[in-house]
Length: 186
Image: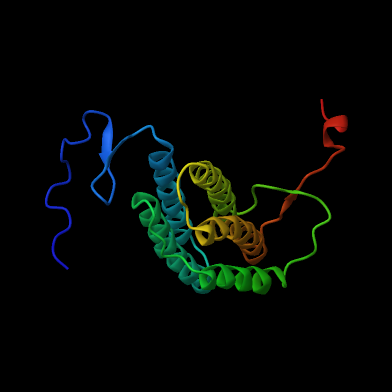
């Protein structure tokens, strides 16, 4: 592959627009660009999780997810493009089932926290939900691959399960919501 970026800055965005993969210029405040930014932020947070001390199996899955998120970003950057398939959604569902099977049943809501890697995973999950909301909003006016919408929805579930798994593996206690706590506090 040749050099994709011969210069880091192009000055073409100085007017508040950016170029899509098909060459079309759009306003940087458009929902399409917002969605691409949300996906990029999510991908970056997953990189932070990978950089923390996590098991190799989870790290490998997260690296694959980063590649898939890059593909979904490419779909958004290329109107009408679809690369994601039902197989990738099914794979996330398998991972959710596998990792969730070793976790204790939940009787209360889980508050974000515990170990550092689990906390970052919870943050990534919330950014994933924001990414999903912007994808849904974009889908009201533009074609969005339905499999990509499903993928992002399942990914937030997997990130929740990974957060719980990382807490369990790190010996960090899950912080459960306590509806009576405020009644006891000052």
